Image (cartoon, rainbow, N blue to C red):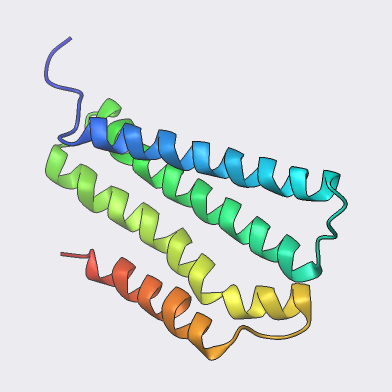
Length: 131
């Protein structure tokens, strides 16, 4: 086979993907243990658990994008641009709909600190990676 199919930094991306999936599994096990021990999960607990798991899966999927795109023969400089866009769209959608999803699930919106940190800084970080 001609050419290098491995993107620069792929080992780091694979490691991050593995760590994120491990974290998601650990979080799910901790919730199960809490319920088994008789702890009640509130609507907020359920919503936050679902949010964390979705967030982790978006990040994991995004970490796997550059190596996947290299398999389709894209040039490395294009791989990073395509992967950035394919990451930014679902992540920004996920972050910017947080207030609405929380209000729908729990009945009230997030505190101002959550808006500033999770939505504000998260969105700013995604937009800043555009370079």
